[in-house]
Length: 408
Ligand SMILES: Cc1cc2nc3c(=O)[nH]c(=O)nc-3n(C[C@H](O)[C@H](O)[C@H](O)COP(=O)(O)OP(=O)(O)OC[C@H]3O[C@@H](n4cnc5c(N)ncnc54)[C@H](O)[C@@H]3O)c2cc1C
Image 1 (cartoon, rainbow, N blue to C red):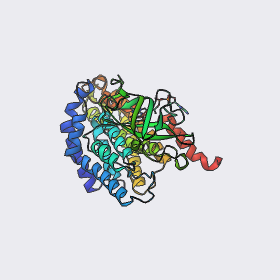
Image 2 (cartoon, rainbow, N blue to C red):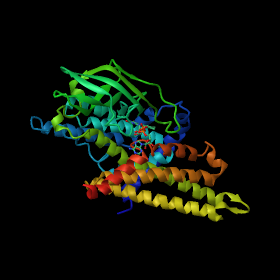
Image 3 (cartoon, rainbow, N blue to C red):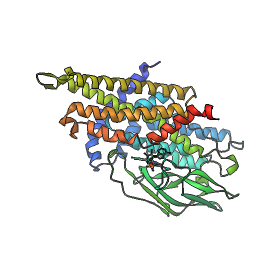
Image 4 (spheres, rainbow, N blue to C red):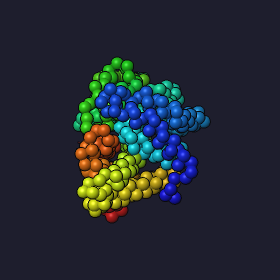
């Protein structure tokens, strides 16, 4: 069970060689902010068949909508277990990208998160106009939940509002730290929607760049993840058609921000694979270096301090790999639960940071230099302890789920 099958191994090889040929040479320019990730994202989507697989998801959704037309479909969400049909393939793809550039993986994840969120719409024309081009990378998507005053408490403290004026929705508010925002064509914005009975429910709403009242800030300067631009989104009396609302507008049928939770879970379920990519690369580079770098007349791997570091790094890799396999199994079996997702995200993020720091230490001064991939992997790794829910929030989720049966 805990091994890739022949097809998955072939996919891993194909993605690895594509990334080494195309992504690796582009990273230095993306790191310096001289090159945007999007043309390469489009190329990758087409050449590796990712766009085709994602558009198939949209076509399934459209066919389902057509079949259920006239029946009570409601706001039901059916956005599949991952990017494609096999969650392990999604993990392999993101792992391989992240061996070279986790930031590039983040640009991909944000656009796919936006596209799959739109698949929850019950309006075929919205799916055709926005989800299909976003999932084929012809348009770039962004997924906007976080606000200046609402991060970990994104739902409780959200201030962005949407009010219905006839057939129009009027949005006001501000989002921050949004991946792809400075260049995205399509945004899924989470807002508090004022319902007829005066209650406010959180709903995702599709907004296209160019809509009056929508503005974005410049790319923010940040520690890592330079190959996925991050920025703010400003909404000032921004008007979109009512059909752009995803899900039901009735408070009585609300599941608490279900679409947002679903996209968050998707993000949390794939981030461990991205961390595994960082860990794998760091272990490989470190074993190679430690066995060839000679000091005091022998390879540094012969010093116990270095060898034990390598042993701990290998242990982290093994554990992270097992968690990624278990997540894929749980997704396939329909048994993916918040506790496992949070455990995997927390463990893999912490280990990615620790292993990357150890890899730099083993490489000495060379590890600190940008010529090697390690310092970039370490800077990018840190994001996984924050984005998609911080370490502390994952711990809270795990604690709640193990204590709930005892405190109920
Ligand atoms: C590079 C990058 C890309 C991002 N992309 C996106 C995106 O595309 N879309 C999007 O919506 N968001 C995005 N985010 C935002 C990210 O999800 C938030 O930064 C994250 O959820 C944390 O929110 P915050 O930054 O407001 O921190 P805060 O919530 O203010 O937390 C600050 C500190 O307090 C701790 N804390 C808060 N509450 C508790 C508690 N109850 N118990 C214990 N500790 C607590 C936190 O763990 C943290 O250490 C991105 C962030 C980064 C860095």
